[in-house]
Length: 56
Length: 385
Image (cartoon, rainbow over all chains, first blue to last red; front, side, top):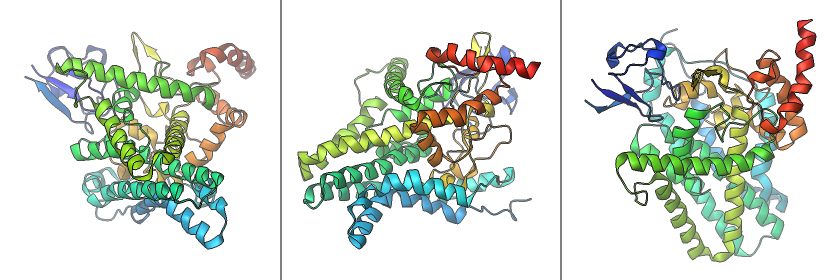
C-alpha cells in the first residue's frame, strides 16, 4: 500500500485507507482512483495534479 | 477544433504584462517630456483609471483552448519568459526609484507618487510570484520568492498554496472576504491572519520533516531573508533616506494584492458536509473575462479554473460558465473595493442572487450577520409569495 501526497496542499491519500466519503474503498490503488476525483482538501484535479509517492 | 487549427488569440498580447514593471520608467519619461511632476503618480493612475477604461473599451474574451491543445500550450516556453522577464524589469525600476528618491530633484509629493508607482509594480509582482509559486519546477518557485522580496511578502508563497487553497471560501480563511466585510476591515484581518497562518504551516512542515524551525529550510524565514538582503543593499548604496519610501511602496504593494484577494471570493461559502467543507468548485470564486486586465494579470481573473487546477499555467486557464462573474475587471473592482458603499451596492446583490436570495448560505461577516439577515430576509419572503 502506498501513500500519495498532493503537491499543492500536502493532503495525503493513503491507499490502505481509501477515501470512503467519495466511495473509494480502503485498499484502492492510486491507478484505480477515478480521473475526475480531486483533492478533498484543496480541490486540485487528479489529472492536472501529480500526486507524488511518499511511502511504499 | 484540433490542435493544428487552434491558435492562441492572446499569444502576442502576453508580453504586454511587462508594461507594468516599466511604469516607473514611463513616469520618468512623462515627467521629463511635460515638466509635470503629477506624472510620478503614473502607477496608481494606470491601475485605477487607465486599466478600468481599457477594460470597458477592449471588452471580454470567453475563448478557451481546446483540451487537446493544452499539453503543447503548457510546454511552450515562450509563455514562461513573459513571466520571468517581469523580475529584472521590476528590480531595475526599484533601483531607478531609489536613485530618484535621493538625487535631490523631486519634491515631497513627487517622491510619494513615485513610491506608489513602485508599489503598483511590487503589488503586481506578487501576482507574477503567484503564477510562478504554483509550479512544480524548483527554479520557478525560487523566482516566486525573488519577486516577493520587494514587498516583504515572502510568506505569501507558503500561505497561499497550503493555507488559502485549502480554506478558500470558508470563515476560517484569512484571505477570503466575507459578505458585509469592508475592504478596510478585511485588510488587517488578512495581513495578520495570513502571516500567522504561514508561520503555523511552516511549524507543522518543519515538525513533519523533523527539522528545527530555525533553519534555512524554513520557507518563511528564507523568503524574508531575501527582503532583508535586498533592503540592506539599497540602504547601503542609497542611504537611509530611501527607507520611508521602501516602507510605503511595500505596504501599498501588498495592500494591492490584498485588494485582489478581497474581490476573488467575496461572500462565497463552501457548505459543510459532515465534519468537512464541500470541495472547492467553480461557484466558489469570482471571475472576469475582461481581456485587458487578464493580459496584465496572467489570467488570474479566471480564478475558478485556477483553484480547480492550481498548477495549470496561465495561458491554459479557462472561462467556466458555471462560475460567478464580476461586473468588470480587477482594476475597476479594486477601486470599488476602496469605496465601501459603492462596493456593497454593486456586489452585495450579486452575492445574494448567487445564493438564490438566501444570505444564510453566504460567508456572512459575523458582526454584520443580524443586519444582513434583516435586510435580505424580506426579499426572500416576497419572492416566495
